[in-house]
Amino acid sequence: MAQTFDKGISDIVGVFMDPIIVYPGAWTDMIPDWLKQRITLDRLVMNMKALRGETPTGTDSEALAYMIPVSFEFPLDRDWQEIYLYLATKVMSAEGKEVPEDIRHDNLRDDQIADLKRLKDWIYRKRVDHRQERERAERRQKKEEEAARRKAERPALFDF
Image (cartoon, rainbow, N blue to C red; front, side, top):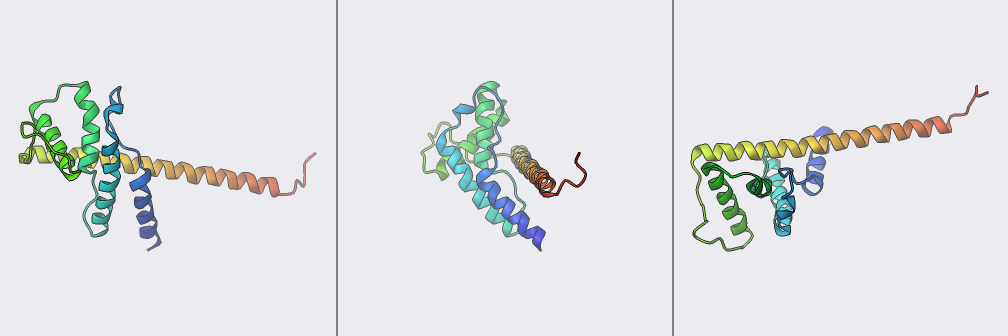
């Protein structure tokens, strides 16, 4: 029970503290601030769905944020162009922004849905891995500080 509670707390903290996973490169500053805020909201919704039994995954807004720098670095093939426009349509519509009809993309084929799911699962795993590594480092540091404190408090019986 305590382990489930600790995981729940870690997941809630992760909503706000986990980094936004983006393709590394010179174009990361192209991610708009409104999208970064949307990621936090979408993570919170995903966390609530996970509490109800749904398998957690990355969100559409996180996938879009990852793809923005990619789209500046490399030409996307047709499938990934359609996935990118689909994500932009979904996320911008959810944000109340109008999507021009000539780029609006409301549906994906099954194979494109599978590709998007793999991307979102990968993003989620990277987020969790980063959080777990950060938690391990914090525990390690706390343990080292506690050991140093105990050593400092222990009387020096045989110091010459």
